[in-house]
View 1 (cartoon, rainbow, N blue to C red):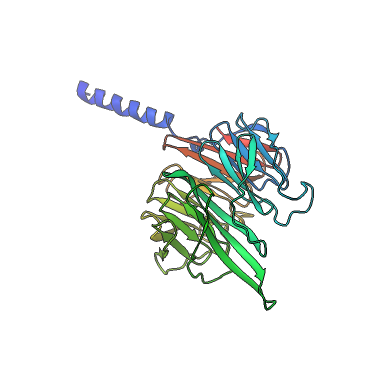
View 2 (cartoon, rainbow, N blue to C red):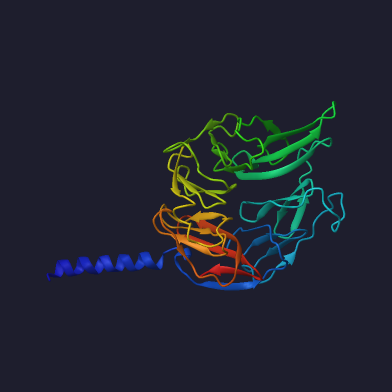
Length: 355
C-alpha cells in the first residue's frame, strides 16, 4: 500500500468516526430514567431545552428545570372556576413557544406560562353565547411583535331559531394576542374531522385531517389543497397525530393508525411512505400511534400503539422496534440545528430519555 493511499484511508476512518460520535441521540437504543411523573394520565408534554420542560395533566400543569428529575406544580391564575370543579372544557393542549414559554388551554381560557409563572391571555376571543373548544394551535416567533398564533376550534351554539349550529373556525393573531381575526377555512369533506394546524413560519401554514390536506403561503388568508401522489388518497382511518418539518420544504405527517406521509415541497405534494397495512400489520396493539420526529431525511422515530418507540433509517420505509423500559404513552423530541436530537418519553410511572 502506498503512503498516499494509507493517508487517504486514515482520513476516511477519522471522518467516519467523527460522524458516529456526532450522531443524534435517537440512534442509541438505551433509555435513561429521569424521574417519576407527578400524576397519571399526562395529556401533553414538551421540553424547551435539555432542562426546562412542562407536563399538562388533567387538572394541573407542572414544570421541571433539571430535565425531568423533579417536577413542581405551577401556580395558575383564576379562570373563573374552582380548580377542583368540573371544567367546561378539560385542558388538553400544550403548545411550546420560544425557549421557555408555553400556551395552555385551560377551561375556556388560554394561559401563557413562562417557567414558573402563568398569566391569562385575556384577549383570547371567546363568544360568550357559544361553546368554543380549542382543537389545535400553532405559535411562531413574529418579526414584528411577540409572536403569531393560529387557533383551530369548534364553535357550537344555538341560533335564534333554536337550532344547534356546529362550525370550525380559524382564529389568527399577529401581535401576541392583542387583536384576533377569524380567517376563512377551506371546505373540508368531513366537517367533523379532527383538524390539526402547523406553522413553519408566519407565512407557511399546513392544515389537515383524515381525508384532506391544505397549505397556505400567506399566513392563512388563502388555502390550496395539497396533492396526494399516487391515487390521491391518504389511506388513513385515524386522526392526524402531528406534522414535523426539518426545513421549510422537507416534512412528514403521522396519523394515528400508522400512516406516514412525506413532502419535499412545503406541503404542495405528499407521498405515502409508510402504510398501516404493510409495515405495522404484524405488530400488536398499534391502533393508536403517537407523534413522529425526524433528525434527517432518513432517520426518525415514532411512538407505536404498543407503548414502544420505533426507529427508521430509510425515511420511513422500514422500522425497527426499540426495547422499552415500560409502556410509553407520550414521546417528545427536539432537533437543534441538525446536530443534536434529544428525545423524552412519558411511561406508566416515569419520565425517560434516550441516551
